[in-house]
Image (cartoon, rainbow over the protein chains, first blue to last red):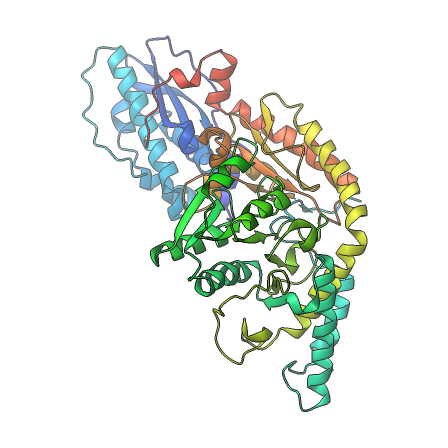
Length: 139
Length: 405
């Protein structure tokens, strides 16, 4: 399978690989996927409580190149957004950005799920009402 | 100077040996005749060439030329063997025994026959890919027409004890069929010594051309017959119609002759390189060899690098090193290798597996490059892997409730 240039770029130089301290109240962690399915994505955000802006984002991903690239793009896009704005990131935006083929769309879905899970975790920790999320998992 | 990319996917296909190609070329130009044209020199030349090639192909496996039915490849030979025997031996029974780790060309053919009323028993294997001979003995009955077990597995290289399997089949009057696609030309095969009645193999895994293979069909003790699955001009003793691929067959013959002469030297050289590759890669923490390391093809190793995903790993070096992975992501199905799953490997290990298959043209320098770059890639991917981080923190991955999707 040939990869798009964008996927290769992110794979070669993934942005924001790393770990934030999940014990901190300002940090939200989303862990999605399963080892049995061949992809696990952990995405973390650090939020400024005063502005609700995401000041840092990190990921670690077990998966194919497209999953790694999707995580990398997601963390790039998260930084600087408020947690409400971050919810508007749609998996199809990632598909477009990385020119993912149809068999790799689930990688983008996983990234969107990871974003939502991280925000949900942050909201829970900070006693904010839980979001009602629609199931988007397609695989 | 090391030339990139390096080819370590010889179980998928091998490059044609230049000596093979040289023998083929005249059969595209001056000797282009149809081997079935009996009325002029063009046909006679082609027929002579086919006869000579058939003899060489037979010799490789201890068979006579009359027992070699030329096909388009091993998949067709598998189909012809299984469907052909099912049709021909319907009076004896409708039961076929095979194994869950067989190639799809065998499994899907069996599934096809199941729809037509065949009874198929799929034997399971142990973690190394071996079947239980006692279990085999207990499932073969008087209604069993065929036991179909591959000579050596394409993903892990495990070699089956074909003679013992054949003896069990023969006790109940069943035929022994073996798909020897990976083994033929790589290790010694003798259909009499091994008790094989039908055997499928192909040219392009032994440095011959693609698009030509063969089905061995025993002529004596017993005389085996298969019902043709392709009707037409009655070529190949009526078992497989279709104008013969003369250049391909000539190339197959040459490839078989070379394999016979060089098999031992190749195997000795390749197993040394394979072992070095395997031992060095196993120095990486949490890496495991899949399959049976004692009875195995000399040129294959299949290794799982835990906590990294196979396709993601391959991407780090697949511009420069060609291998294949049991990871789901290499196929459209999203299912990891059914062979590795059949061995009882967890999906996580199956997703993390890479098959390296060496060949006649593999060099020490290429192996060293591969060791260096695969090691580097595993480390890079593990730095990115949340599972590796958890493993290092001592978190039991089974204790986590994964969102199955």
